[in-house]
Image (tube, rainbow, N blue to C red; front, side, top):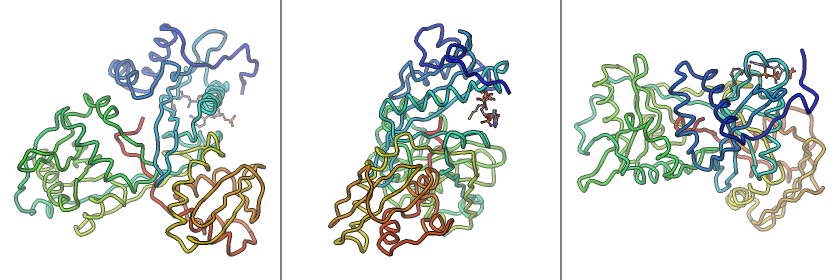
Length: 410
Ligand SMILES: CC(C)(COP(=O)(O)OP(=O)(O)OC[C@H]1O[C@@H](n2cnc3c(N)ncnc32)[C@H](O)[C@@H]1OP(=O)(O)O)[C@@H](O)C(=O)NCCC(=O)NCCS
């Protein structure tokens, strides 16, 4: 395999000129979508206007001045309880077919990770092809969830008392409020503003229906589309749990109109509607893949751990360590980070301390996101740990169900 080593052969950078942008969009649209024109249209409109997106976020690799690779990074804020992490997403990662297997993508990904590091990103996120991104430190942390409900039982729900109609742009603030309220317990979910909904509205509008009360106020919504023999409900939201039945009835009505006998709700297990559906005949699936799918990597580990402080204080306050002193020191790839709790206050410092425990960056990502259980990570190698260490790790690393909604993927 020939690798692009010399700096002068291969240059990676953000797009600067209109021509560079045109060539990059052309390459990404050609490689990524069967429908070139709609892909290009998306890149030039919604893609360009996505919140916080800047021209230099289209990053390119030039081989002797010729475009050899391109990608788009976007900026999200993900939520882990009380913590907020500035997240750089990778999308549309492409190497021009003639330049593949020469290290072009490797150089472009590394350069983009460096850009993110220089611009204060905590972590990076992507939805990856199999066996590719682990080499850059990405760990699979996000799962997919699907709850399948046959129409038969749902169709017997009494007649809807709410008004059911297609969503309009004026409903965006209500939809955003309901989504954010339902989303508080969804780990890693991207924080969505009205600007995110507005940006994707033209692609979305046909799939969104709202339920309004007798004063016309939007109290619930769902996003659904026919997919083969089922109705795929990508998202739903309720302003109070009592409305779940009405949403289910509305989805059943849409499934009947579409002449499909089955509904599939793509909802994480903590969502109110996912919990409500437990009382129906339903199949609840979780799909986890290794080294592909929703993956995360640390960009700046020290800053990430520091940003976890509000969430760790909340967790310590709810644990038996509430009034105690506790300390643990993470050894991650030769670096040490001390985390201390004292009467509920947590501090993080890049220094050595007591109760040293060694993790790989991937293991630490599993712990921070909660996608794997702390006991299992600790059991993966022989360790002698004090009870203080175990209790502290148990308190700050609860298991969670990290998820990014279909709507927020890129
Ligand atoms: C995937 C893609 C971007 C790789 O680009 P590339 O420039 O050929 O990759 P590189 O030469 O930098 O390869 C880096 C490493 O990944 C490996 N690799 C290359 N393509 C791969 C693939 N499709 N799957 C898994 N590994 C791959 C290389 O063998 C090399 O391995 P090494 O670390 O052991 O040396 C390119 O094949 C492409 O554009 N594919 C179509 C679009 C796509 O699938 N993009 C990814 C979207 S998430």
